[in-house]
Image 1 (cartoon, rainbow, N blue to C red):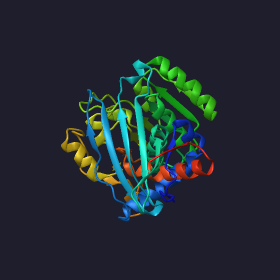
Image 2 (tube, rainbow, N blue to C red):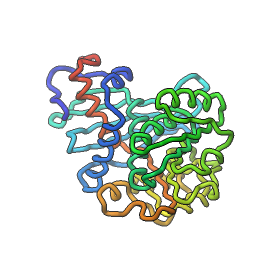
Image 3 (cartoon, one colour):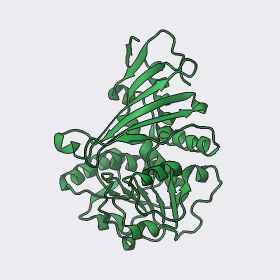
Length: 328
């Protein structure tokens, strides 16, 4: 899919350019699911992400990957700074570089913020496809930021969501989320007064707060309903050890990266059995087999997610004449 580097310079795509390329949520989900099939087949290359930590609970990650089927290789440089909203800045920022397969030269530099939001939610939706009950219709959201919104968008693409219960530590964020998600998706979206109210009785639960190396978990086992699916976007920051262990099936997007994270101090509690999402997609491991199972995905957010989506953006943006050509 990638165009030769040639002498045409490097294409720079701003966030506005990336969004104007017009990649749909359904396209992102399909691309991410197909990537997991390739990953399960051993047809990808991705070393564990490396990070520096300039501030407490903040990080800058370098995330390289190679996805041969899409003829895509590149790297994402992404930062997460949870205190940024107090500065009127988004907590997540990212840049992506795509490289030519024949020469190794960079062909595109693009803003990665939109892709990060969409591909993260898409991975949760793919996990839900195999782990949630097909008739699931009530979605609980904890964390009413970009990821909370993107997860409503992705999950409603695969499930007939009728009710969204949203909670945020900042009531004003929850109120804004209700207006935005309600207007965008035409759903019944309600701001609830507590995390417990968001989780209890929900068929699908997404926790999307800050990722903390020293977590202060609050989601309790008794809130996690039989038959529910949870996506812990914030790792184990929100979920108590008892709630995590209550999951009958526990899935992540990359077991080696989860091990590497654990060695660096994250994930103090994990179930005895951790399943790779790609193995579900490939049919090597069954997903949900009983209606009453509690299931959980704790995806780390991997570089292959980005490399699944970025080539689609690059191709459509190039065809539409978007972006600016930078000299080499």
